[in-house]
Amino acid sequence: MMNTESRGLVLDENLLFEQSQPGRVGYSLTGLDVPSATPDSRLVREEITDFPELSEVDVVRHYTRLSTWNYGVDSGFYPLGSCTMKYNPKINEAVARLPGFAHIHPQTPEALNQGALELMYNLQQDLGEISGFPAITLQPAAGAQGEFAGMLMIRAWHEANGQKRHKVIIPDTAHGTNPASSALCGYDVITVASDGILSKEAVAAVMDDDVAALMVTNPNTLGLFEADIREICELVHQHGGLVYSDGANLNAMMGISRPGDIGIDVMHFNLHKTFSTPHGGGGPGSGPVGVVDKLIPFLPVPYVVREDNSYKLEYNCPQTIGRLKSFYGHFGILVRAYSYILSMGGEGLKRASELAVLNANYIRARLEGEYDLPNKQRSLHEVVFSEDALQNDCHTLDVAKRLIDYGYHPPTIYFPLVVHGALMIEPTETESKQTLDEFCDALLAIAEESKNNPELLKQAPVRAKVQRLDETAAARKPKLRWERV
Amino acid sequence: MDFPKDLKYTEEHEWVLVEDDIVTIGVTDFAQDQLGDIVFVELPEVGDTLEEGDTFGVVESVKAVSDVYAPVSGEVVEINEALPDEPEALNNSPYDEGWMIKMKLTDSGALADLMDVAAYQAFVEKD
Image (tube, rainbow over all chains, first blue to last red; front, side, top):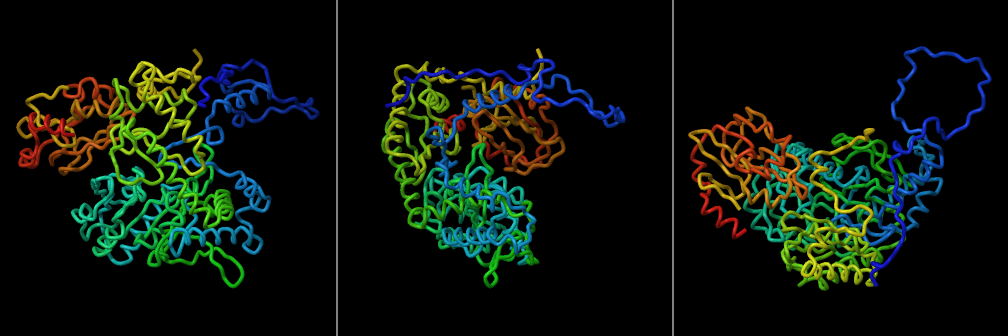
């Protein structure tokens, strides 16, 4: 049953500034037992007006109450398309808290740091095995920095070959960060239209010897596998270009298809999506990059190598694009991802991908008809509906807001742009059939409400702590600072 | 939806007003309706040179961020300086207060590729 009949208090909470009481403090100091002295006036800070004066319990209650307003993957279903909000197993947290990992200093000498280096080396090897690439850098701080690193390596490779190319081809079903990463590396972006799936002909129409790379997201943002990718890679390679694959959706194909085997030259991973490390406020992210042999000389430094039976950080790479991140990337996240890979095992990772695809297709099958499905090709780990079947001038935004009343985090909306009023649902493999059914029941009930009671959708959320917000006014005239009225 | 007869239109949903060798450019009523409430507008600098197809600005709504493309080649001679502070003009008055830039044409030949109002209306209905 949907838990729409539940009752409970949602406690209101003012800002700390509004709770301030003159003279209230959260500490108690003993009396001064040395002579008082007046510091030089240059050392005395100005008084901060309206700085909150509070006790310890005021502060603890404030933040604890605010935390009860949170909605996270530990509190409920979070089908945010493209973001892969899978459950993060707690064993990852237990492993990351082992003192040898949690308390290690980044400048500990290599000889005393072998366990941490071995973990990084093994993770490089495992990610290589999963993706089909011979070398991996763990350094990038998140997916977009992984894209940037990959495009820098592509540029460095062309320059080492004495070539200055100016263009990158990106289909309209790629992730929104792809054009930004290309532009940041100085490339002109050529957008190509796809019919859900990118065709070899569409690439051929814009491919020439000035194209540095094709940048493709596979599976793409419609949740569709790029079926012609092998032929497209051959075409790009014939013109001397490289192929970058955004691996943010690797969750759909672990153990089934390896990008390194089908002609991709560079790919980034999102450990915080595919490999169950926390994100969405609980981050940080981590965006390792895998490359083919010819790009290895350009990898960021350092990376971990094994010599005899010990591990060391390799810095001696004359053609490297340099360092992208202080120290060695987000080490604590690497520990969690490695914990996930080991606890799942190869068969477990494959099963995770199969269930991610099954779950998305189950939702697709239950909602198609009541919700318009513009792309009918076989989809993988996410499904994208349009708003075209909604009645009575109800829109995707109204459906998303009404879902809050049913107790769910809304899916991604209005992305990808190629779908009119997109509603992009990614359930992930970690949800049970029971959860999926309850969610589908809610969306079907909302479709019914759009026919019989459209005003309810337009007012939603009506049961949440905060009602429909004026997002336009908030964006046009943001108030970013508290002021006493 | 309003599509003035004296304007030319592009497949990217921009309108173009041609006055001798000066063209005024904005986005159409259809475009603003599809985008929803517009909250941010970025314009080029006066003096920028644009080739046909270049991105000359950004329009951000509560739903999406969209590039705006130069329908012709030329030099930017004037921008609507009030627009970044009043982005709602693009919603309320797309053909008047919501104009974006004026360009001095380098090649009037490209104008022949633009749609007239009947062709644009047919394009929008098909879209």
